[in-house]
Length: 326
Image 1 (tube, rainbow, N blue to C red):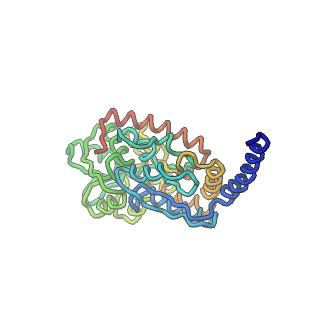
Image 2 (image 1 turned 45 degrees about the vertical axis):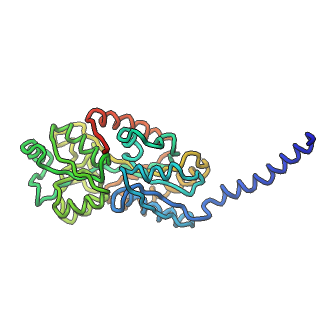
Image 3 (image 1 turned 180 degrees about the horizontal axis):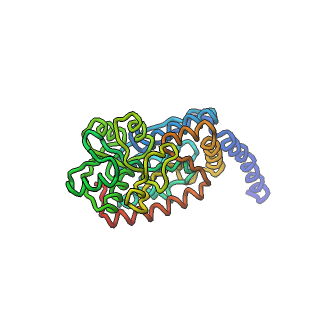
């Protein structure tokens, strides 16, 4: 083949490929987008994913279909996303557990939470709320709970969405900070755990505002404290744990969209821009704030920095406390 013919074929290939690439990027999304939630329905991850998916569907004109892929502390659903085609048609609502805690809990993950995913946008920061079943626990504030726990080491039970879940790690931090010992009861998701807490099967939990605040407002659970350093604007009557004699206590959750590594940057930027607009809207911001979630959009790079920093922070706690996922 002559150099001239070779150059002509290369030029023709580029001419044919460029419009196809432009169509693929410019038309996105031209079919449904699946949003993986690596937990069972009912928890904060699921609540936020469904709220954001409905808004994205309205904005972009294609279904954003939530798929719950629970199991193994979120690692099974995360693996599905890590192996998915990086074409913009698979997203995951990740959170502190799946992206920052699990690398220290599971030693043989088939993916890396930094290199296997492209951060898209941080959606919300969600302080945990320490809630008790008032029929089982008489404590009305954090210091009374600490005193009760110290009187009965191992006598109080706390639930979580599973071994290594955000609620589990937050309670490990609380026990360390207060010198208490409580029995951990892991569940297969936050929803079933909250059902049992309300029913009186377990005593307490330290979990996100979206699943915790409704039963508190209904009077079926009692809120003792908030895990952030500032009180919730939507529930200012609940004092922080830090101001109740546990200085500096800060164990908040955070949630955000990630995509398989290699997803085209124009798609990431578009989802980021749409999510930022949605989270700052007069419709979504008050809705999330009312449920104890602080909308916190930023750049993909800022989200990546948060993941890296939180991996280091919680990894140290997990090693110190010798927490195991199994």
